[in-house]
Image (tube, rainbow, N blue to C red; front, side, top):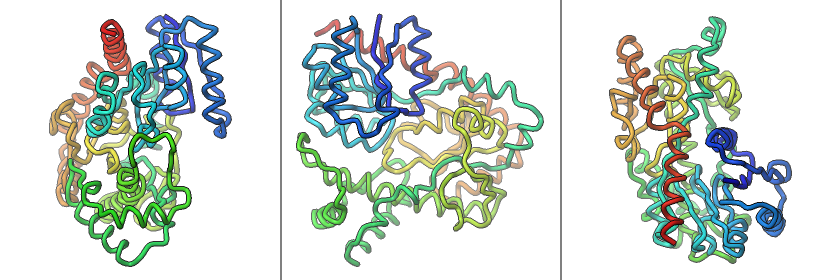
Length: 395
């Protein structure tokens, strides 16, 4: 089997590329977009066309959805397989989503339920995974110095989203600001359910969309995407920034908190800000050496589990995460990991596990074992290929 892997430099790509190769698949790699982010859809389509015409490809693969690739594969009758690892992905509103040669895998079930009616035979739900083999190589080689350097009672690795928040740069009326502030305060009290999209008025949607000259627009969209984008890309990102700042401030006032971020952390003076860490070499050491690893899922991920959940567990780290609707489908709370639904509960559980070391270690071990057995990239990509094979046999 030969495939084309179209890369744009997602952090998931090296792991998936390795597993495809380990499966005995001949992988051809198109890397133009890794080095030139101004590539046009026409240029993308041209490169993919060249590959398809030169090689007997079983399918073309990418992380996230590229309409230009989908249209090209449809025209040349080659399956296009993609795996969404982000939310939101505005490109999913393209008419290309309807193409019958698509095989689209979405990690968030809420995202899947939203988009699958557009092309129900070609869109699937597939959660993310962890490259346990990669993490094992790093954590098993950790030295005493590594444990001292990266160890902490409580650690958080990730963006504070302040630099990614488009909402803060908009000029909006006091009414709209007040409405959104109230909506966010209500949403912050609820985990496992996102009610922001359905709560937005048409007036608020229009004002936010009109306030940003770079608001995502597409002549190729099959429906109006304004409500979705305002809820997820603007309010959702702002909510992520507010929630992370509030949670980390709350915790840093009670516990020693090691904060690994490249964002501006000046408003968190009690946190031990250690800067950013390399995803592939340093991050797994943080996860393994920290007694408790905190995950705060950004709200645009409505029901699914972010990559951080899988990676912490795959590194053998103890995970404390906010509750997500899909969490009980894969892990047992209190046995494989811990979850919280309010800041008081979070504080109480952190205090408990810092004083119950044996129980904490047992949970970390069980979480690692379950991730390694059921949620590795090998397992997930085998599931993907089986779905792909079965679906193609039926066409």
